[in-house]
Image (cartoon, rainbow, N blue to C red; front, side, top):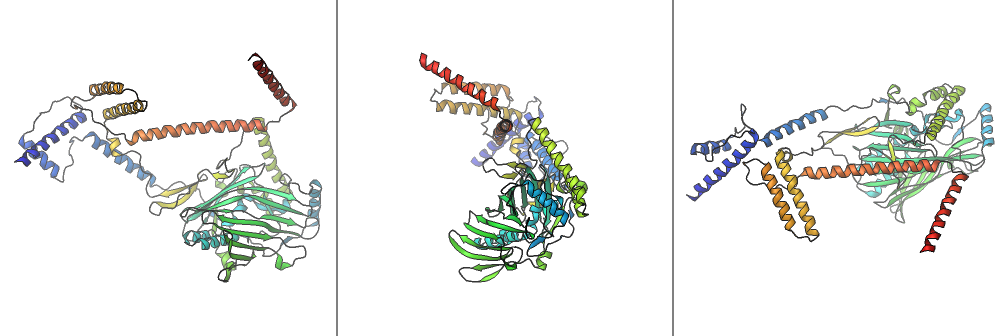
Length: 616
């Protein structure tokens, strides 16, 4: 009969627990019987074992169950909201592209244009930076430099092959192939894109055969010096690229060079590999004598620190007595440490061969054939009516339309209007001591690089991620499920009085730990604990005879994290304000009076120190 006694004891404890919960949920002071009859025990036991245990027609629910039901309904409602299609920027496909012929890129200048060239030459001297020199419109390509920087991503699907390749050496070869694919598209004739205006932006995307999109966001983040920053992402294909480029130009008499100083970082997201890339410079010669032509030059590299592989390339300028076979040449090698694994030789606008040093096998690395050009990814841009005032196509639309109809006078006038407006805005900011900040990029003060504010380097999750989209220059990812809720059922269903007791008990525990660390007598802890316990019993419901010991919940942790984040944000804002004030002070002109004041202050400090030492 012992097991029957144990069963009866369990049922009695169960009934006591149910009476206490019912008392709190109803809120009335109706007294309950201290004992149940045998019929009550049987009904309760059958009720617990039955499948239909849900209350009906106004039956009482515990506070925890009511809160849990409400929280689930809130979550489901939010999930329905998230399932709605997000707002996206409209895009349209671009028109057919024009390609310059392979080989030497030359242009014959008209007589009236030669006079303008001579006029410019008289204003400059060898070694001078040409970034502040106003160039004539007849040498301009009707698009912005921000747009031209995106030419390297018409074959971004090649990077997708590198992501899924397991061999590190083969990955480097594939990335080198993609790198070379961005140079063969050239404008007809000798043309230079517009210098972007401060705050100018550009955005587009390329659609892959898989249906994914490679997004491109660019912004002119500085004017003096001229710095362009851009961000490329396709998380579904597994890569992203960040870069900031400082454009500089030098005049050498009969030639000039446009130097693109900066690096781009290609990240293979699933592998956590960063490939650092540099860009060749553009060399234009024949300004005074000979035929005006343009070519690429300089040494560049592609380096992955994680794997140790490195590609070194040299874009060679045509020698003075060289023939056509020495035009647009490129050569290089792929190395692992100091060992050369493969050599590269060919033309950056034509066929490039790669030769394995170990096996001696030679194969084509890159060849922009007609079929390859047809396989270029389709680019999509924002319609003109949906663009902002500072977007490249809308900003330069009048200049571009004048160049396309060969009206250089109107193009020059429209270009002058934009440049004068930029100068006026700069003077106004300087007069008000205001600092200009980019809208979509921020600078890392440790590395000096500009990074996209909404950078996302998470690997693609095919179970949850659906697609990427862009709106207002913010690139986001549409997901199947929302982010997990911080609240849980255990937190939601806690009675407010229980929360209050938890806060008091946790405060006592913290006080005890501090007193123990300082080796203070524990009598104060006992008194505090007793006082707190009495306060708790006086505030709690009469049916609860002993305060339960509740562990620390996630709510206290989240509150602490929130306070820490808020504190860090406040400190960050203060640092930014100090940085802005410092920049304003440094930009102010320092005259002779400033140095006189500094000398007087130093002199007074010296006198005070001398008097102090004398009396001491």
